[in-house]
Image (cartoon, rainbow, N blue to C red; front, side):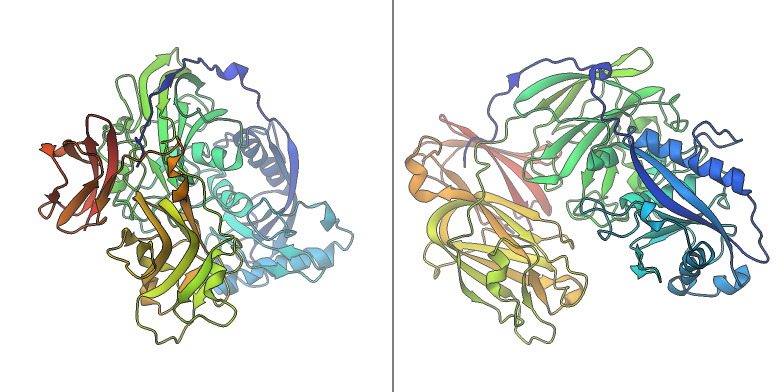
Length: 634
């Protein structure tokens, strides 16, 4: 394996938000709102007032900081101008009737209300409403924003968003629909929190970031998707990055950059995992006096987020471990993880990065990726400038030299596989098409593991493996792999110990596995089991990164190699090296704590049986080189 990081090219750049070129597209997005009341719960808002709350720009009301339209205009950094046509509909039954229905029957009232518009307003121009495009969450061509507002809290479906995939009698497609009340039970005014929160789901597909199990704090009051009182919070950095709203600054690797951010939310710093671009940190400056930040627990400071989209869409996994962590986390500067620890205090000044705080691979919390891999990212020299700007330095190492290109699948051939369902053969796992996949069907009697053996038809040096499960939502769709083993062989007969083994996430998103460089022509990917003890197995795509071993003489590749095996290990970790010299070894926890140190070792076995289960970093130094590896102790 190559030396992990090369020296940083130091560049100092001061970036002032006033120089940022905002997108400011002001693109129109037109939707439909239906206010549903009931015979026993009549409308509590007039048509004029409701239109002002939804479509107004300068409208003011006690407890209402911004209208629906103004909120999203600000939060999308003036990219979207969302307006709605508004209708009223009285339900045929009382509130108690709908309260008794399950949600999937209760929201049929919403469909009735839409059909009523078709009947009552035959000249209404449905073509004027915005529809989903291929880039938006939701079915292409379906109406983009269909909002239900209810006069009562109780009927099933209120306070939720759904994707019913209805087709109305006029042919209009309803892919997502969201419902709320203007005044939730915990509100004393029309602060629009619930309406805006549910539109975050319905229009943009944003996940909840509170803990839907209600046993931890999620992201508390730091975002609309988990907050709500006394005012309506900003949407937050990760969501701006997802939609590229405002100016998203992604500092180059191999640089140390001085950045000054204004606390107005217009500019966000994003730092992505080079192995997994859907895992990233975002950094934003916030000011407690800026609109929506009345609960921000410091007058001014940095808020750092860690996003991992492989995790399910509710912040229920609060263990802060590689496999059990939030979808969106707040990196809490004091390292106490109080948001994950419980509902109270639910966020405080200790969460905020202020002068004197740092965020590095050895700080608590640290800046490493969820796999435990050292990111090398450092955020230091935090300085408050006046009452509205924060200056800091971000250092990002060069992508390590052994981050190789993806190996072409063109020459791969299937050697064997556990018998598949007809039409879902093993070749579908490496055909470059995510819509096709290898699938071991329901009812199969083959013992575990379910194996795919592939001939790469050339000898490669490999150090990254990628797995993608299918994303189908109709049969055959399950069989997502939970525990796996990966073997690499030069001859397809002698497999030895697995080069990597562990647990995957239950997601259709591409996942990566890193391991020390190994040379081989054949790979065996073994599905030890699937989630929920499912007898099925699915693989949409397998990918590898590396290079042709025959090219090893090129100057880009070193012949001086150190490898660790087996990895993961239970008792003994072996070090193999073709360097004829002694080595110094240091083992660290992922928090940077030194666990063990050994001098003047040769190719010895390292006893790790007494180590706790988890991920460790091991630094091996010789007279010629220093390399950093990761290993897992089972």
